[in-house]
Image 1 (cartoon, rainbow, N blue to C red):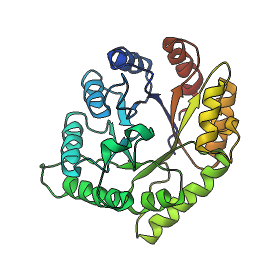
Image 2 (image 1 turned 45 degrees about the horizontal axis):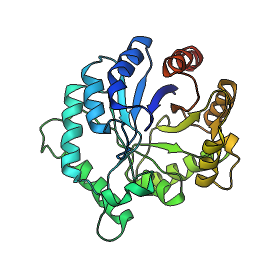
Image 3 (image 1 turned 90 degrees about the horizontal axis):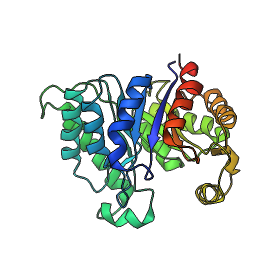
Image 4 (image 1 turned 135 degrees about the vertical axis):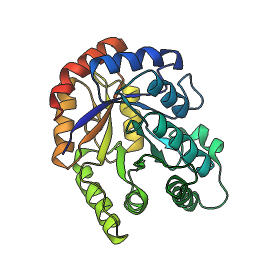
Length: 276
């Protein structure tokens, strides 16, 4: 199975830096760039960012990590993805989630009734629009989903082509993968064995207290060291655990004090040799 590592950009990276980042990752031979959905920030919108980064590169894959689907019109989202896939075949990596990570942005993606039901309906409409010929021939697009709770695992199995988790320790990643595979089998589907991944935070130089507190808030039952790496050796330890659990795709977010350029150089040095 192919092991791949990508770079994730969070709210800390302003949109104005995207051209520089995309060019640097392309030149370094890094597999992918991932854009988060943070509305109230200087970060680039993930769909606008995908279009820009794909247009200025020839090899780099670009994805959303993760974009909110409920609250968006799914047919229009499908049109955006179909357009990107036509312009940059095999380089568009959409990942969708239930709601924004930041509570203050929840009201921006309101839906009537059950949010989970709205998500399921949106996924069905999205897939139908991508495959029914409405936009002409559309290159194959895998739709990955985020999530770290049992309801999300069931949804991923029923509707997703892959999983990109977050804030889940390696010890829980294996059972999560098995739950997704079981849900897919129950729905008469199968998710490819190498379509399971994880977003990982790296705070090289030590995990700051505010990041440790955020990790505890997301997973009170887990040691923050099992969720956030405080050094490159610790990141490799986490990656070894995820690989043992059957995960093969990883998005690494820089949360340390070092300049981003230093992180990019270290990323290429530390992680490219681990790809196969």
